[in-house]
Length: 67
Image (cartoon, rainbow, N blue to C red; front, side, top):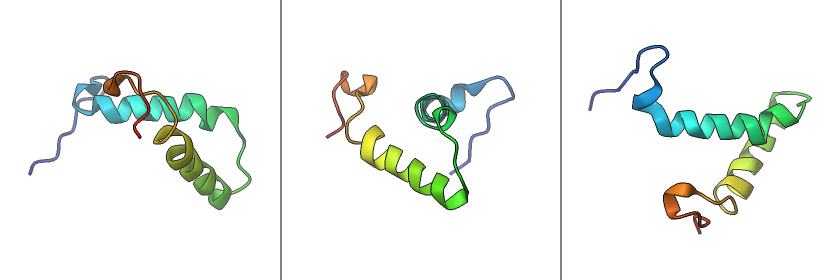
């Protein structure tokens, strides 16, 4: 397996993770202030496992929830 690295300003190799990071920043990170690393880690885990993976509509699934 060869790891893919896209050139700067060319995110096509990593489009899915770039999209996820954009959603994570827009819907969670930029809306809150975290007191410390552990608070941030728990909040991000709760967002990903509690909202993003279970309740958020995903275009790749025909705008249905993953479950």
